[in-house]
Length: 417
Image 1 (tube, rainbow, N blue to C red):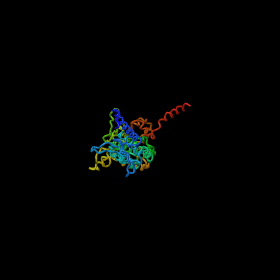
Image 2 (cartoon, one colour):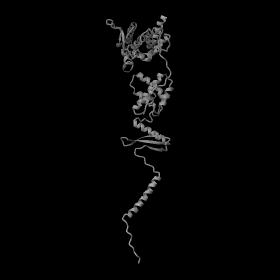
Image 3 (tube, one colour):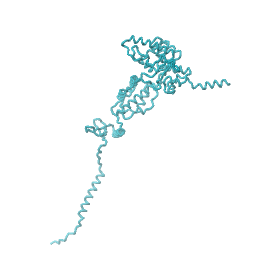
Image 4 (cartoon, rainbow, N blue to C red):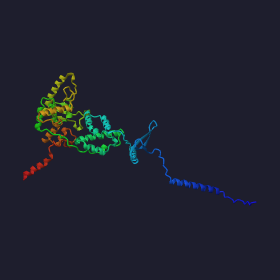
């Protein structure tokens, strides 16, 4: 019979250690596999997605912008040829979202210009002018998407315009204000036209000129007996703007004055209105009261009598506006109507058609300056806010008074030698 020796005593922790060693071995294997095997991480909630779109043949990147009122997810997407291009576009889109300046991807320059023009609440003639200049914008940039327009594009567009500097500035303003209007509506991210803060210089345009004394007399002589006779005399002798003359009412004309006053008050006109929006003058300083030369006051008296005859002849067709220079039916005269009549008179005077009614104002400044009137007085008479405006606008009509000191000193010292 075999000798059955008793089994060796077993420590209670031995089975536990054996199982622990086995577990540790398994964990080591798993750790090794994790370190040596590539694992694709799942995109986090709310992160951007980039994927290949087979139908478009491009990569697409999408940003989640939350949910609309119906619970539908709202996304904005961009596309690109490469993932890197899409990532750059997504970064730019994130910047726009952070700044609150998301641009519409399909909104075009022509739409922005049209919306801005429709929003204007200005004088009809001003809006007409803006619409005319806006054609340059729509013809040159109209089909461009607003979000793709760059400052370099705007600069090149302005430089290529075959216009004067003044007209280029007006076209630039139309584009700048249109984009600003689109920004307010949330359709544009930035105003690239405002970044181009200096309008490129264009052609010089036709400079204004002034009538000489002989030319002015010829024009007044040619205008005798016409409906524009008094209009031209008043404009030339007082320097009022054409927009102020066309809006002048008899209520603001005093042909008697007050000789008994101390000092006596001569016949005068109160220039307080213009054909601008709401009837306001160009500036607050433009509101002024101007004395009339006696022969201009006489011309206005004759003009008022002729107008009374026209009123009777028109009968019920007469529309009373109390205008001094009305049409044959009492309605306001347009700038084009006055300009055509003036061209006819200038041709009759032998000056041709290269003159405009506003140059009567330039002639007024030129004649006063040549007669030694100080620029401060001229500035008050023409209704400028400062002499700087007079010098800037009418520098070619002003007498070069700065030479006076040198001329006088040369004469003084010449007498001593």
